[in-house]
Image (cartoon, rainbow, N blue to C red):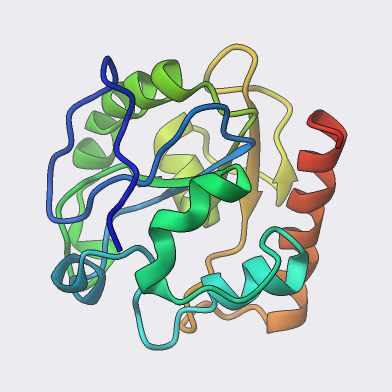
Length: 185
């Protein structure tokens, strides 16, 4: 399934995993970087234990559980996906703080091109790396990385993340509620 690319005047694609973007996104998910499996398959959140697609469906962000190969359908639901760093690694621990911060200008170009209502950071570490803050709570943040865009921190959907599924689902439902509040109907 082909990915929706960025708008013609948007940022160029780089790395093994194309961004999934479209116009008028309600939510743009931002991860650290693709895992090796995602990079090899060319689809977001492809890790065998990753709960992203289940969380989207169970929270009501998508009407059904998509397969990672269907990530190109996300813009049809007002959703998109990108990463701070384009290169695939076995673990985000392989990325330096400087490399993560260097991804912020690229993220800024993407946000300027597609103007999502919400940046949903898939892991507290993702938001901390992007914001430079020492700590942050789950949920909506009190300061925005980009003017007019709401930042929301989600637990990592990785199966390796220590939080129980029910707690992850709570925060994905909070994202769905925030989307509905900002973009009713």
